[in-house]
Image (cartoon, rainbow, N blue to C red; front, side, top):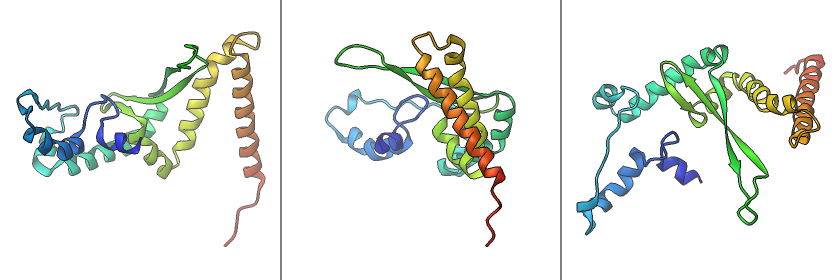
Length: 179
């Protein structure tokens, strides 16, 4: 799983620069090199930065932009959940869904969670993102109510929100730790 994340772009699923650096020489030296093509896509108009300063500098600039834009994403409802079904291969049933967090930013485009979660953890914005995720994930279950097929999910969402609220309230009442 980690190897895949290191070698493939999270947005497109295509092989990334690191993958090309590792496998490129092998592919070009293989007996089927005539069937090999390399497609270059400049997604963020970072071509000038990457060409001038290198891809590592381009990556650093993008992370700096993400860090600076993160508070705006929180205030502008830029975060959304995208659901994908979890399928039971043996029965063909869909017992649930997985919620994937995405951030849509006017300047950055679609930003996958693996690009901003660690920055949100460092800045403390992860708590606000967590509240946003819980609200979005629980809202459909609350609308359908307890008699619906997702009634148990609504109850679990309510329990998680209540536990979070209780924990937060307890932390507010606790005296600060002195060192």
